[in-house]
Image (cartoon, rainbow, N blue to C red; front, side):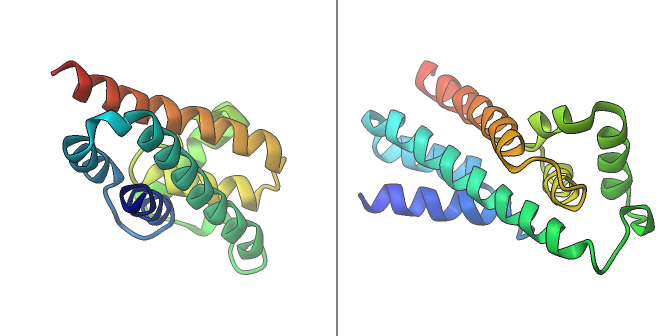
Length: 139
């Protein structure tokens, strides 16, 4: 049970604007308790999705403070370009390092529907963690 809380916490924090590597944590926990791969997959996905929704909420609140066009870093500009090009579907890439966090913030800033945003974020994240679990279990 402790492994699941550690996985959830690590995945949640890694999906917010804080740095973190939930993939490394997942592999370490899979190495310790490989029979728990289904539980670890679900908990990592849920934690990471909820962390991303936290970033979405920050974007919603941040509307009052900053305009996305005012952000000049490369990751912000790349995320903004994807949002302009692909719309809400860009959230399928929310699992990407750095840019994925910005995509979630922009989704909130743009007031995209919460349920649709959550579903797309969840799909992207479960696919990423599934690939990691599959590779680990195949070796």
